[in-house]
Structure formats: structure tokens, C-alpha cells
Image (cartoon, rainbow, N blue to C red; front, side):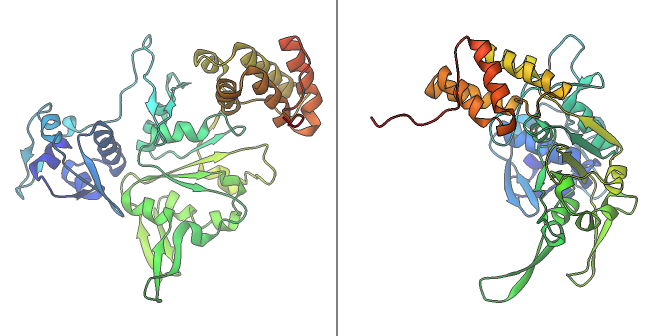
Length: 359
């Protein structure tokens, strides 16, 4: 990748152009480009479509691989085996390194089918096997997907999501006229990117039906609102979804479930929480609540997201305030039980965080 970019300094290349030159899928090429960008060895010069060009460090990166061989048309290409690929699975006794997400936070890979979860998802993408991740909010479903796919486009699903939100719609331009603006589904198909349907089961089944032709063997959709245009998915296009079973209104229909051949349950990793130096008592309380939830005694348990927030609150306002907030964020129907568990764990009464008397 670096060789192609450095051979034409100042020129921008789309993912599709690079994929054609290198003979690889758009998904693999997009991941490699984003890796170069993260290292400062390339830069993104455009977003619609994604375009990349060389930086001052690209030439040095190119020297680490064998020189490209020319094609009959005179354009350099990299041998198949020399093309950058997603990181291979580490040896059994070696822990995978944390991965930086787009927001700057790190993701710590977990085990999935004897592989790091990010590697397993990348392999499923290469095989075009759609995946549905399900579990309570805050367990890390979105974090995992962002870590696995640097080229990700996300759709935050809810009951108000429309077909236009996915495919596109006419929008008024600066001159007062109207132009058709493609939605995230079309963009992902044209650029060969991964598309996350977050909270997919909150989206109306009638709306999701517009997506299905892109996921089956046709890999096409028809944009009826835009002259009946037919959009064909580029190599690398991939759909992955998230489902929160406990959220009101979330319904996993048979039509939706049948599109996702792999369905993976995601729960909170309390061992990871302990290794991240989160208060041990808070982690122990979370484990106890999770056990009670599984037994059906409570409907709410603290997930990794709340534990990370607990530690931030403790660092800013102190541990006492963090425990009080833990009681306060529990649903009303579970609050007394949570307060009892927290009180027992720390050895003193705890009530919900609240304002005190005037100072």
C-alpha cells in the first residue's frame, strides 16, 4: 500500500482504486490504509469517497516491503503476499495488544473461538458471514466492532429510523434547490466499508427490508427515490449488527435473525475491569449483581461501561460519592437491593447521591 502511494506523491487514491491495483478486497485495503494513517505513514485526503495520499513518512514505510512489480498497463502493483493484512492471531501464550478506537480509547481483545475477537470478526468479514452481537448495553459490543473495523460507518438505530436514513434522501442545497444525498448504506456499499446497525432490533422491520438485498447474493439495492438507481456493493462491503435484548421495543424478527449466520453473546468482562485498576470492591459488587440478575432476583447489573464511569467519578469526587452514585443510577425497582449490597460490601450505609444543605 505504501509503495503505491509513495510512487505518486501528491496524488490521492480511493479505496476502490487501490483495491484494483493490489488485487485485494476493499475491506482489507481500507483497513490497511487506516493503519498507515494511524502510524502517520499516509493521510486521508477525502471522505466521500475515502481518498488517501502519501506523507513524508510513506516512502520509508514502503522500503520495508519488496519493490512493486509493474502491470501490463505500466502501473505498479504489490505481489499478493506482500499486501498489508489485518494482524494475525498471536501465539497461544501471547496476549494481543490493546487496539485504539476512533475516539482514542483502547479496546482489550477477548477470546472468541480460540482467537482474539477482533481477528475472528475480520475473518468472518473476509468470508462475508454477517454477525449479530447481542447483550446488555455497556458490555462493549460497539467497542469491539470499532476496534475490528477502522473503516466502520455506524447507524444508530431507533424506532424513528426511516428508509431515507439508510439509503438517502433529497436535501436542500445552498442555492435553494434540492440534491440527493446518499445515506450510510449506499456510502458503505460504494466504498466497500463495514456498516454497523447499532440497536438494529429497534428499527422497523419494514425499514430493515430495504437492506436485505444488499446482504444476500445480489449485493444490490435499488434507490427508488433517486431515479430508480441500482447500487452494487463494492468488495469489502459488510454488515454487522448490535442487539440489546433487554431494551424496551427491541424485537429480533425471524427475517432479521436469518440474515446473521453468526450470533455472539457479549457480557461484561469483570476480570478486565479488575486489571484496569478499577476499585476492587466496585468490581465485586458488579459480579454479585450479575449473579443475582442471572438468577432473576434483580433486573439490573453493572456493566463494564458503568465500572469505567465509577472509577472516573471516584478519581474526581472520591470513592464515597462513586458508591452513592452507583446506588442512584440503579432502577427504582432494584435500588433498595443495590443499596443493601453496597452497604454490606463497604461496611456502612449508602444512599443515592444527592445535594446536601446550603453551604
